[in-house]
Length: 371
Image (cartoon, helix red, strand yellow):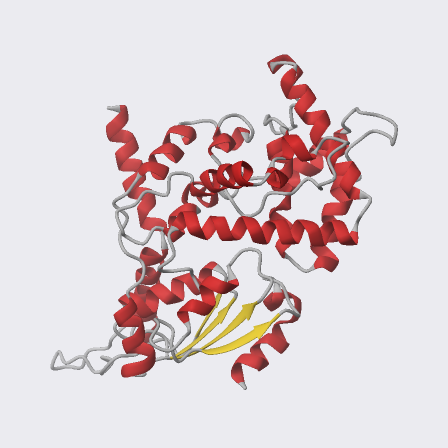
C-alpha cells in the first residue's frame, strides 16, 4: 500500500513540470482569446475565433526559458515573439554532465566572492570546522535551528545558492550572514542571530516542489533517472580534486578557500538538515523521484527548428550571461549554432550581468533583445 501511495504521488508530481506548465498556458490562452462565444438566434457561434491565435509574445527568465523551449517543442503555434534571459536549457547534455559543469561555475563564483571579501576565507573555514566538530561529537551536540532543522557544515555551505546574483547585493548579503556567525570574534559559540538568518535564507517551507522536482527539469525522456546527479557530481569532483572537499579545505593549514555549494539539491536535505523536507514522507518521495526513469520528453529538436527556422512561426532573442552560475554558458551556446535546435535565435552575450540581469537592469537587457 505504501509503494502504491508513493507511485501515485510521484505520478502526480510529474504533472508540475514544463510540459504541463505549457499545456496550462495554452488553456489560459484559449480562454482569453475566446472566453464566452456568443450565439445568434439561429444557434450560430458568431464569436468563434478563426485560425490559430498564439500568444503575441513571451518572456522566459531562467526556468521560464526552459518552459519556452518546451513550448517550441510541443505546441504547433507557439508564441510569435520569444525572449530568453538566462534561460536556455542544456538539452542534449546528460544531467550528470550538466552538474559537472555547474560545480566548476560555483567554484568560480566562490573565488569571486572571496576576492571581494578576503577576510571571509578564514571566517568560513572557522564556521565549517565548528559545525563539523559538533557533528563529530554525536547527535546530542548537533546545532538545532529554530525551525527544527540541523545546521550541519554541508547545509551551511548551501548558502552559496545566492552567489549567482549581482555581486553588489548578493555578495553583501552573504557577507552579512557569515559575519553574524559567532557571538563575538574570539568565540566558537554560534550566535542565535546567525541561526535565525540561516533559517530565513534557506527556508523551503514555501517551496517544497523546488526540492522535489529541481533535477527533473533536466530529465528529457531518455529513460535515465536523475539519481541525485548534483550529489554524484560533487563526489566525483572531490575524488578528482581535494579543493572541492570542505572537510579538507576548512583546516587552517590548507591554503585553499572552502568552496560554497550552488543551485543543487541533495539527499541529505531530507535526512534532518531541513526539518520541512524531512517529515510526512518527504524523504521517501524525494528518493522515488530521484529513481524515476520514465519521464516524458521535454524538448523536440525538429519541432523547435520548424518553429524558428523552417516555418518561422516564432522569432526569438536570447540574453546569455557568460559568467552565469545557474545556466551553463557553453551548453547554451551549443544550441544556437547553425543546424542546432535554436538556430535563428538572436543572441546577446554579455559578462556585464549575472543571472539576475533582468532584475538588475531589465530595460537595458530588453532593449538589447529588441534592437
